[in-house]
Image (cartoon, rainbow, N blue to C red; front, side, top):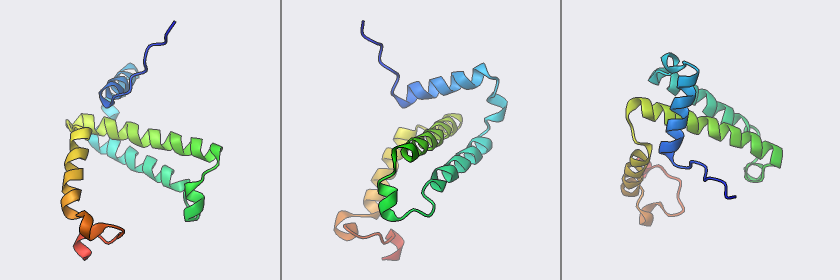
Length: 121
């Protein structure tokens, strides 16, 4: 018997998150301000795993550290999806618009191999 496919779209994940919060009556706590704060905390927890590592060490995490980083990545993603939903922002559309803007700010011929910020050239 074939297993049904796991939901893998952001829309599906957003619906799961909404249901998860509704089941626990957490909606009153999920204001945009609170979600943005939680997102920032989780991003800091993600960064904490890389604190004091060298560049090379950060590229080759041991399996247990990689698993912990994956958990923090998930937390960041989940709060970001919830925040976008509360504000009516389509994160895919916002990311695509940002990529277009970045392509203008950082044209290949000027930015190739450079980490210089667009307004510092």
